[in-house]
Length: 348
Picture 1: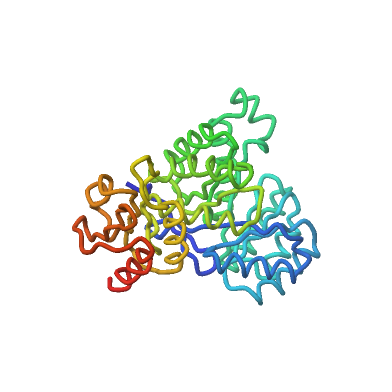
Picture 2: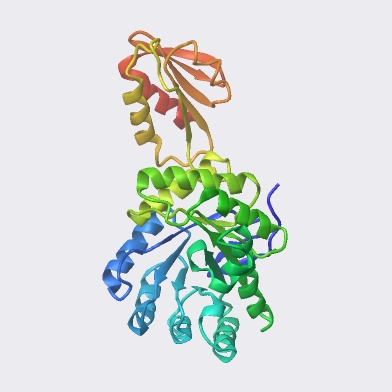
């Protein structure tokens, strides 16, 4: 069962409550270069990104938000550290949300100024606690960087905002350590009802980081924890979106495309199943149907083991069987298998 959380809006994207889990990414362009940043955000939109975050290191970057906001469609979150003036400037120039920790931007008057601006524009604030950015006093109190110090740090920032009568909040508690991240979110779920942004921070390159992120994010989602996700990879942001979407599909939380089931092949396989599976994936990649298609190497692991698939192929010697819900509907020569399968998909 999914954890119950409050509902907030980043632009037109609803987060928390019973809303679909959204996928986020962050640009790696210089925000001040509006042409490159706009191009990258548009690429992210095309890949299915729901929300994008951009770095705001100075006033020029904050000013650039105005132009970027005019050219893109998805909500933009301004990522800000330490300087409340940058937050105010980002809000003025069209930011749909802020990623800022209130305890790090100065006096209570400065925090109040940001909160009032957010209230006026109905802009949410994400409190982002990373294991590497916890205050020394909290680390000492809780005997190191662990789930307790991470959760307490989040609660401290939340309290600052709540004392100003502000609760348009979402929270993240990220570490590069999977076990620590999962433990922190589990502990926080017991005492915080704001929506959670989840992910494994600094997870690595696209290959290793995809595995690490899938394990961590997948573990939390299976517990019902998580309202919006980001896969943090050392690579192109579009890949973060692809991986994030696929994690949701694998868990049955997103049914926007055809799901492919394929066997790993073995010595019984008599057709070029690897090539066939890749071609099927390529041909049906943009078909939006919530169905399962199985690509199996032989009759042994074909209609029987893939009975739950809506359609499938079971390879033979120079030919293959096409089956529907486990029932064989035709035998086809190997060179015609792909086209015949596509025809059957089109009928559904």
